[in-house]
Image (cartoon, rainbow, N blue to C red; front, side, top):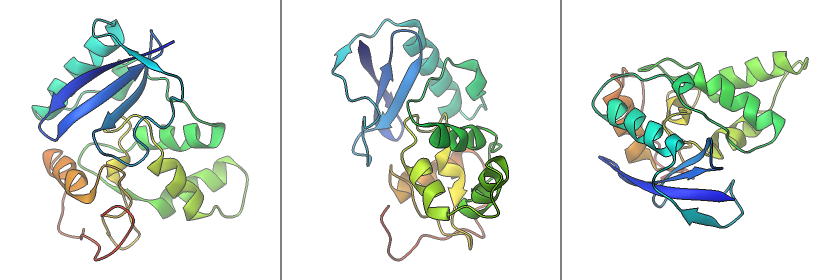
Length: 179
């Protein structure tokens, strides 16, 4: 059984998903792949400990603090490859960004391969079921393009600004799938 509740943030409403003990999803209203990793019906239930912890975490985050993802019982649903990419995302510090290419290099080494397709990493990043906490918004294109955010480029920019990221080398793409 899966459960849901809602959180109203400065970026708009979020839906939280839980398996009863862990957070399995945090989706922005209107985002691409909204609720995509939980195919079972979710029953609305506001009083789960995982939800209370997550809402407090989000309150801290949106007030400018830097809570740790490790403070929450996270259980994102996905295959081994995607979970490995999401683990890498959790290691990106607040206010910093990395590229799909750098994550591809890390994944290639982990998998004992010479190279790794950036598209595979992009797919894993794009299907991240726990927005903000697993910080996929900290991943940019190789030349600083703010591409590839399922929640939309404007929200990605606001999150990076909230975290104090240096935006000088980053730019909004003129076309792309996340606009």
